[in-house]
Length: 420
Ligand code: CTP
Image 1 (cartoon, rainbow, N blue to C red):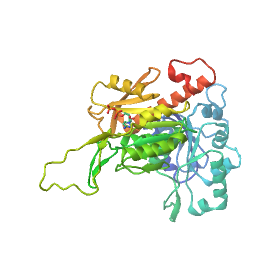
Image 2 (image 1 turned 180 degrees about the vertical axis):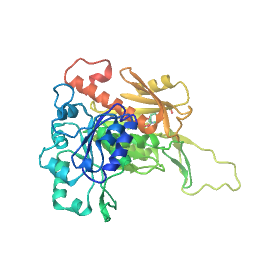
Image 3 (image 1 turned 30 degrees about the vertical axis):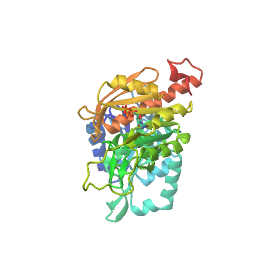
Image 4 (image 1 turned 90 degrees about the horizontal axis):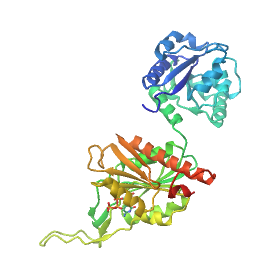
């Protein structure tokens, strides 16, 4: 996983039977390219030996408070400074209690107090302990302090009892860690995303539409949420489940999409229009099913739909970042840049829908992004979740650029740097 490659991860292991699963977690993190430094408490060493972690992580294991690292650096400060994140797995009731109450009487608790990096706890304990007022109170304190948690899961516990208290699986801990490491660079943004096709009815059973699956737009909604934004999604008909934590408005026609988008546009600070809006609709929708009996096929008379993106570009506030998509089958750069200018966008994400792996229903995409100030960013073929992250990375950069401009520093280039 690229998210963990090259990352310095501190893995704190405390004294619970789940410590053996931390060995697998350590292996998982190492395999994904992280450089793992393990810190064990005295009690943890009753369950697993430092040698096990040392062999798997390839780094010395720390367990004494005043162990010194290279020269005169104090161990816990040096490690805590270098890391990208600290994971405590398993986290016993004891370590949660110590950290919640400001105790620092061994290497791990001292390091947690001495670090500014995100801390992720994977608690593991007996169900009665987990439910106890003391642990629940400590959890509330730790959450308030901004610490992160994964699990515990329900299941059969080592003490033979069924209930909540089992440490989360290594895979879930890795996933939670990736979330923790995702930059929160869209916090405070209100992001409106459109996705999917529109359908334009001919009669109550037939419609005109396109091949859009909505996958790209839904991936954008999830990614924006992960990066800390508040997200609203306006979606045409798709087979996809609503992304967690995202307010979804379902629509069918371009006219309905326009209404929903214009309603939410004043709320938004960022708008990304990934939907494949039908450019035309039948001029008339028959009230009853058109029967085929006895006649020639009916002629389909079409009229244009409103261009929602063009309307947004005309009416956008200076603080809004507007990103469009361009689905092309040829002359990608010329067509995309023409849309970028005509619709007054800050950026456009262009894809060749005929290229292998880049079509509407594919899980992958390859795009080229062009900005109003003349930059181009190429994104090679990768899954749509990762493409979504690249698009939002560009949005975060555009925002930073407009803030730099507000702060009065030298603008980097053309038109859009003067906004904001
Ligand atoms: N779009 C829109 N409303 C429309 C048509 C398109 O908001 N009626 C938006 C899409 O959501 C996309 C961008 O405009 O972000 C470009 O869509 P695309 O279909 O690639 O281009 P069109 O503007 O429709 O131009 P053409 O069909 O000529 O390629």
